[in-house]
Amino acid sequence: MCLTKKNSTSASWWNQSHIEQHHGKLWRIGTLSLLVRCLPNEWQIAYSRKNESESDLFKWNVSDSDQTPENFKEQARYVFHETSGLVSFSPLLADRPMICRPRTPFNLTAGEEITLYVSTPLWLEISVGKTQKKLTEIPIHRPSDTWFGPTTREGELCYASNTAARLILEELPQRPHRAVTPVLIRNLADSVLSIERLNVPAPLLPLVQDADGQMWTPKVTLTREKDGDMAGLKIDTKAPKEASEAKVLRKPRIKTSSGALIRAFNAVFG
Image 1 (tube, rainbow, N blue to C red):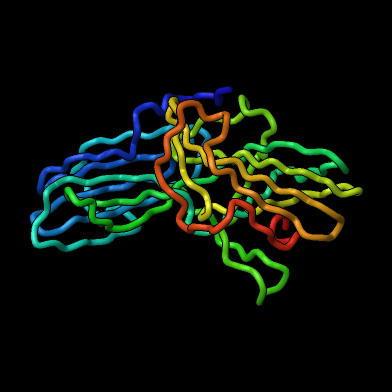
Image 2: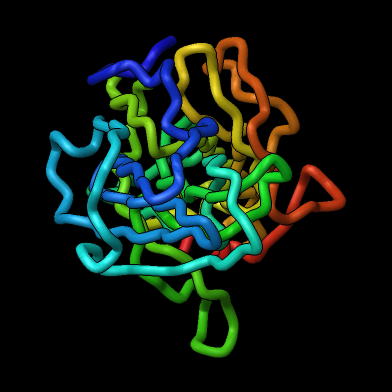
């Protein structure tokens, strides 16, 4: 299987780069414009985002730049005794669960199961020097905040994301700054399961990349056992079968003691 390709992601935006002192480079990844400047005793990081358009979703490029941080909305300085000019980018998943709301809610009838392909935005970790000392993390696309739980006291702060919740992998566009999670939903109950939103546990998932450069996570299985009862959440230990020649880029942010997690029903499906 393969994803619909707007452009190749075989070349990566997240590898090492060298910046001469008093110079800068500009990365454009989706809607993010990110400036990195190297000075003798500091690194300067600045970025802005523009409104999302369809053409932006599939693009990335890097170029030399003489712009200064004042031209960007967000700015930061990191001071060092000396700088080497070496900067490293590394992709990683979100630091909170992603609450993915299908653009059109759907119903899963009793005894049925279906696999959805859900994509979520990546974060960008910036490190410098031969030891790759971490400076910061920046979301390539900053999702809105949302509270997920039955009450204002019980639950957790998450990110909100809309999804097409595609059923056919070939219809999913290949985007360099998003990761795809196959979500298998099983409805073993005797009634219809109405799905308006899904909790994708991004901090518990490793990030992998396939031979074509597409980012993936292992498959997540959500099982509804009985009406109004508990739901089971299981995370596979291997890359999904759809990701050919996959290699692990990042381990999960949060380690779990078991591959199977049990959560309250409303904490899985909303």
